[in-house]
Image (cartoon, rainbow, N blue to C red; front, side, top):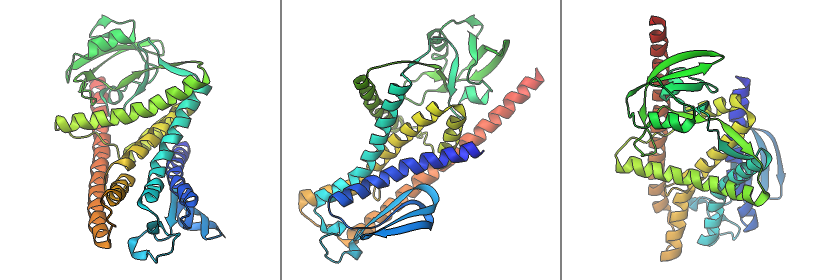
Length: 359
């Protein structure tokens, strides 16, 4: 429990704090007065005022907070060092800096892991390395390290052979014979349609990883490739959901906490890589053109620059209202998904246990 709590605090604290630090840094570089910059939220535990800025550490270590002077149109006094006194392109730079820092963190993590640990390659052996929460394999009781020997009674010697026998079975029952601790066991489960739009049947497993050393430049290039991969995968998945009118499989705070907790108990490399993936997700999500998010501000400031029209307080009132409603809807939907996933997983595990006892 303690490890899980520390992992969650570290993950969210690092990802969100660096995002806010990006905004803070560009504010300072562009001459915008920053009234407050803190690590964490809630009551102030320690603070110090230096120049015009109050630096503080707060009680809840989940991210950070930056407050530029005149960040609200209603607060603008006309001082040249205020946020809305700066040109639209300067404000775009401040806004973009947050997601940029998230992608930079992900690049450092992905590249660092490759350079320190080695290039990750999937093992060709039919040994389970990881499982997706709530998918058939996890609910049926399979574990990392289990070696699959047979699929529907037919022997498999490689991961590819196993996958070839599972993929065609979309939402159909499949029987796996696996080896764990020297003893063989058989489990029956029903596949799910792959969420990536390929139409394949999956049970939510990934092969074990192996690592090999790589040169520095290749390691950095591979880190950048991972940033692109996770961003492109998100776009591809959302596009497929929209075209097929499928419900997006979003993870909210509860789901992310569960994933982080699981990674923390799996190993340090897995947790560090997950932080990189979450950082990409936070950066990507903030770039979406949704009011109140960085992407929404970017769109507004771009509009201001193209049409040479200043944003008014009335415009901001309606935009912010729409943003709050949309973000709240996304939050509630993601939380509903998290709870439904947990309930489904619990029910499936209970049914699998009852079936096992019945045998």
